[in-house]
Length: 259
Image 1 (cartoon, rainbow, N blue to C red):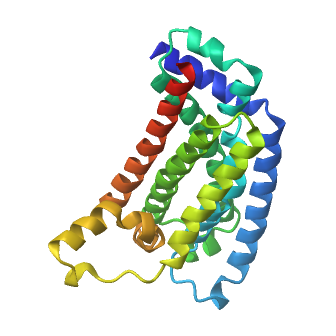
Image 2: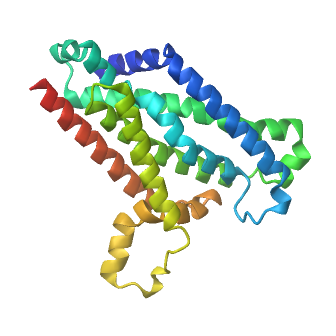
Image 3: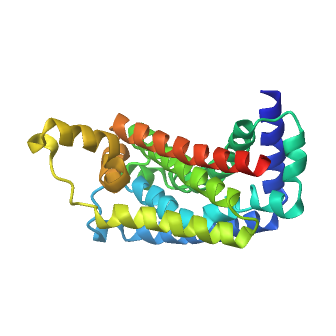
């Protein structure tokens, strides 16, 4: 555990002194704030059926391909370029601990940015309590469901970024690969949105397949449940499996470099 916390502290420190992460976070939060403001101002004229808070989570989710590459691209790519990865290999640190420490460090930074973004509706409630209440920003079930959905998908996206960084020495290549994989993943969910058939007519094998792999395709359909406080355990398990899968791939890659 001591080696894990050492790697974690090092990764968080590296992120906090990196100018690229500050620039990316600033522009990301600024654009998100502008979009959130215009959405709230025009909410009554839209056909948005979900709670207004969900619009912010959707913005964070679909904006992640522009943010997460800046957080994760230096994880292993920069270590390999500078030759410091060999130094880490000589320390009493396992490859799995190294990958977990870097992933968790990036995830903590993602949590900080997400927390800052979620302060927007909190500020609205403080400044305009009546309007905030009318928009449902004081409903705790919406906060729990939407935040949990954001966390589980954020964990997966960070794992994808860490894996991308582990297979190249070039930060830009790692960033572009992360951007491509996340965009492809989100595109699949967008194209399948609204096409989910009720599983009432599914066979047992189809229900099992939908429970095991349905979230990877119907993630946005599941978001409708989370946004109103209905937690879908299959979605959590699906994303947990996908996160572990990419962390295992990263560990295998690091083991290969070590040998």
